Image 1: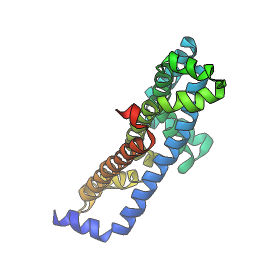
Image 2: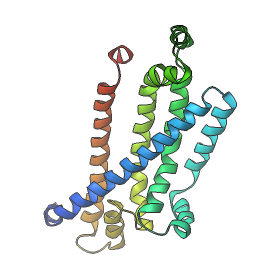
Image 3: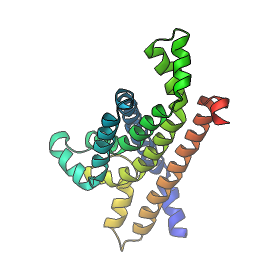
Length: 216
């Protein structure tokens, strides 16, 4: 325990930087994935075939092992941030695409018919009725993608990606040295703490952006 505490106090500045980089990379990737996923969901949710194809393709991407995907991206994007963010976006797509389609498809038809009845056009119905009603489902998909990305990013140290994965890999590579176990353990714990903190932010965001009628 003393060794662990000593490691944290001596490296606290670097640990804060690595934690920030980890959260920042996940946030950027999930933001891009959310924008793409909502666009895909809006385009296909009215078509059972289109919805099935979009979900299946996103699901296939999720089955590719992370090391394999990074290995495929490195020859084209090099090492560092580019392949890391690209891989995270790919893995984050499925939960958000699926939840966007489910959320939009579950909007009561009578609600959208009433909106059209008062003169609202197709874009107005989508942006003012359907997307707000589907938002809780979309946000749930974003939460899942974020938690998934937090863990996958740790493996991106293989491609010299940013974040806490480098701490874990360095510790595992130095097993037997005094700081090896504390280094890997601290990296793992910080990822868990950051994931819980982000999830708490999503819960608060959901309460602030979801109308009381939908929450209740």
